[in-house]
Image 1 (cartoon, rainbow, N blue to C red):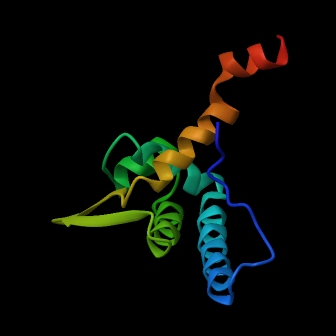
Image 2: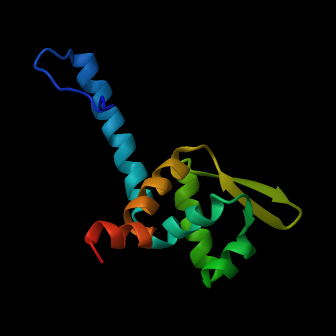
Length: 121
């Protein structure tokens, strides 16, 4: 199976190196946004579809201020998109990136049965 990861070589142009650094910066910001358990849980809930701030508060057993703060960071990183309906604000995933990353995280950390098999439990 071929790896989608790049092979680095000494003959990369300055433009290619600049593009790689820009991509690394963007990936780093995404991973920083995902590195908070509250934001990670919000994204996990949004994978199943749009949720209001109130629904997220209930699902996370968290205060509105805390949920709003985490949603603001996710919005800043372009991971969630708000939609206002009257007084309620609903959030959904902006694109497929968080879902794809969460699938890998779930496979590595949350799939208890597979984890037990891999460890030989």
